Image 1 (cartoon, helix red, strand yellow):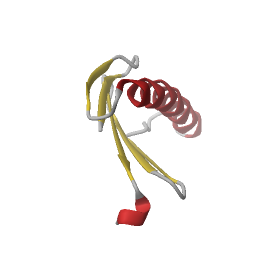
Image 2 (image 1 turned 120 degrees about the horizontal axis):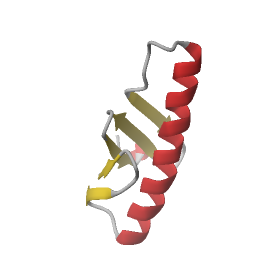
Image 3 (image 1 turned 90 degrees about the vertical axis):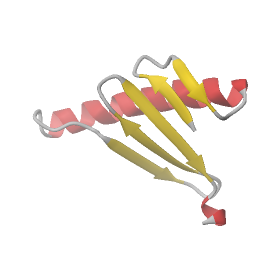
Length: 78
């Protein structure tokens, strides 16, 4: 779990430093792009939740105006 500001500054994490910085920077950019796409489709709408699943990980991102909550889990363990 990673809790970060919208700018990418990490507030709390359960990951090691390398993983935290990697996920925080990449997911912040991805959420920003997703938010832009949603706004292009409907200017009155906003991105609030993003879920990405791969063979290795499932990444869930809750996005507010100020914060990002990133949760990582192994889909094989579900």
